[in-house]
Image 1: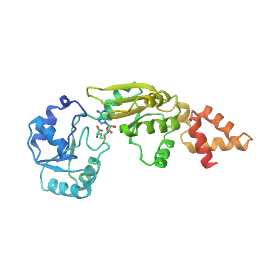
Image 2: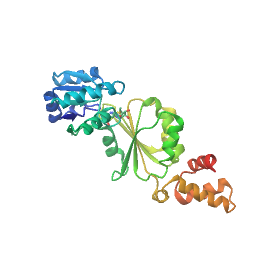
Image 3: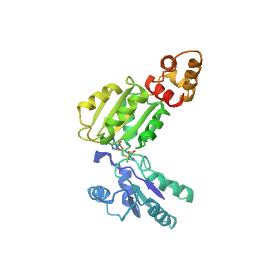
Image 4: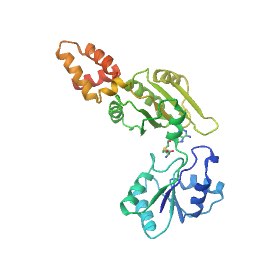
Length: 274
Ligand code: SAM
């Protein structure tokens, strides 16, 4: 059996009895960073053999762990913080086990995205988790344009050194009036939840240095935009208006008002494609 064992995202008291039990009974523990996990295990006074499993060794370490599981051993997988398999290499090990018919058991526990969503003040009944945005600027722009009509609440992970650039890209894609909750240092001493618009968030972080770990929870597009389900459909409305004699600028203005698509994002797409 492979156990996915969540670890605290800041507050050590978030360790449950079941987490302690699974860690202390596993034949071995696979850890993203063995130094980080050793500290946690020392704190819990648990002594089990540790192997390393991370982004850079997963193609070699994954099959080795699988062999031991197939031979009947029990492995507890932990990452540096939070729930394994969410925006970390745990995903690949679970896929290997699923393919080989090895049972996987996920223990519920700390997870940054759910903690942030719950406290965001934004609608929680329908949401989409987007993880980290792509690092390349074109890939990031493309990903965000595919989300302009997304009406569900959107959740992003972000590192502090990229926060300003990401907020500016979000504002360009979704417009400045869209609401955002910036959930920082969750469960830690300096936990902070900032609820504002994207325009206000950009202005705030022009004046303040981003520090710590962030989850960004962004309001979905208004329902009128959701009705126009793709950017392609909005573009085809723009094409229609241009063929009826409107300038690009006026057509974008009209379609933006009609669909709720942010004017700037639509205009960028029009310049690229029409
Ligand atoms: N698997 C983990 C989970 O879902 O809980 C997340 C792993 S991912 C590599 C790390 C990202 O999670 C950080 O860059 C940050 O966006 C978010 N994160 C982790 N701990 C956090 C915390 N205490 N407060 C805010 N965000 C956090």
